[in-house]
Length: 434
View 1 (cartoon, one colour):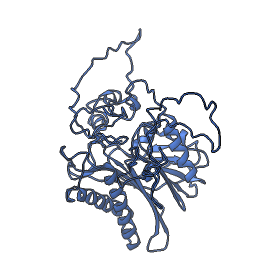
View 2: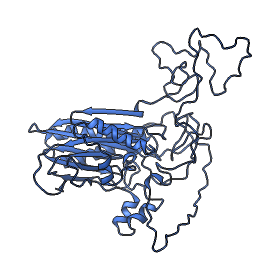
View 3: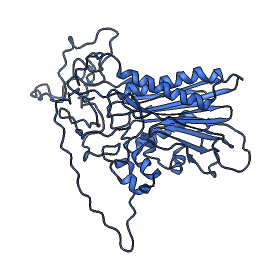
View 4: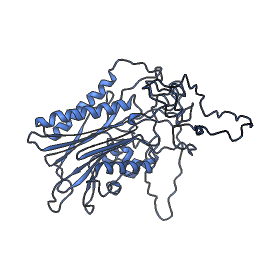
């Protein structure tokens, strides 16, 4: 989940106590309008830190526990992690009551009353997954019990030849605001080109899910148009990021639509981050804006892995400027505030593109922070990648998403894997910057 700096938000829905994320305009579980709820006053507690005897304490920042971030805890979670309410199991047909003379039990207030005639969906209509009786409206809510239905984007998988990607809603978010696009094409000489684009919606902006989908689609289409024409892959990536930015900007220009949940709230521009990779002509091209990342994991694990991107974030800027060391920067509450994104309210857009020429086979991992929060360093990411991911990229992507979910799944998780097949050419660095 990428976030821009913003005001303090509620942690739970006042209506159903569903956990909320910063910038949510309505509850994704019950539809509660959050625009009329007064903001929680800001609080800045002081945390006492003591150093062990004999030396100063080394401050290590746990990205999974950042304020307002994917590791933020609202206290003990007494729920079972599901959006569904508890429903009584129906008795098998023909099963008599245990005691016909016993007084009728009081109805369970958690179980919605269902009119079997009025609630039965018409033929061809989608049936509610909660009450199993009501039909689902165009907004994705049951017309009988009001339960939010699973969205198509909650979990997505795609495998296309030598590239695969998996995206999952995670265990805390009420929707998936990530998106991806994978594709293959050919260069003018007939050699293959493989593309992976991963986008992470900025949750503090309006319609982040639409922004990430528009950016991923636009960047992918731009590459499929430019690469076969002979545009150099690095230039093609630069142009694709600009095309993605235009697509996200266009969302802010769309005519106002009926938004019953946020009509009284100021609308800020949709926004997202983007990271992508191209494998073409023996080159590996990486491009990004934001804090999603690309890692290189050699097939021969005796060789060191590497991170190929630098975050557009407050902490990364402080470290790069020499104003703080890494421990100090990432311990700051502003650490994960992004400084680069795609959107109409973005600062000067500066797409980053880098070209590498790997000298040995390896795996390219393209992911959002929903994954790298649980495998931040290159060594940690390499340890999480299964040994056979080069031969089974879809399975490898599934394993990596599972790694994030096992770690807590506090954010949307998206990862694409691109096996890079080259013959070993002797000793040297895993990747060389062109």
